[in-house]
Image (cartoon, rainbow, N blue to C red; front, side, top):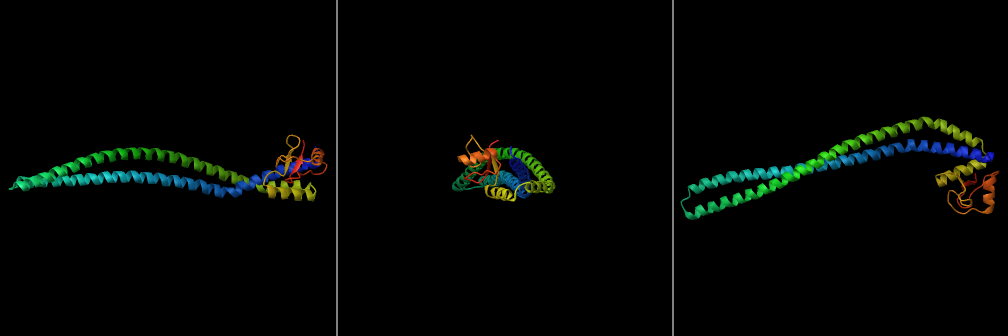
Length: 234
């Protein structure tokens, strides 16, 4: 392996570590915010489900009150019926009593259905809240891990920056300029292995004979004709 290639690989290794550290520091706020936003959305959904369950129970209680009012009304109708002097009046009160009883029966059925819905809804709410507690615990743990990683990366930055600077200082200026340009434009590796004896390991295009020859010796930095990455054959 040529000395130039060795120094380029060292630079790539140090630059990759520096990039990872920068990302850990820069992406932490957004990652944290995203996790907290998802957690808040989950809590909001759980609260909405609990509210829906309580609305079901409120509807049942309303029916219970209405049914109670009808019971009171039936008692009044019965009292009035006992004092009715005309058959028509008696029959009218009897009709009101029967109609009220029918309404109460229907309300009783509705209340039973609402009770079943409420119990099922509250069971789901309990399960969701249990899961939400577990999710929150995991999110807090993940955020703590991100914080620790970002803090560690922040501490490492000066050392990594110095190592990158030292690695660049050991290379010709024009090679460093090309290296930096490739990283800015490609966003990944600046130097790659030739695949299958003929393909660029970055863009996977077939390399020309002269490039392959240069990539094997690497006495001078060999570059892919298509993407510009440095290429070498181990």
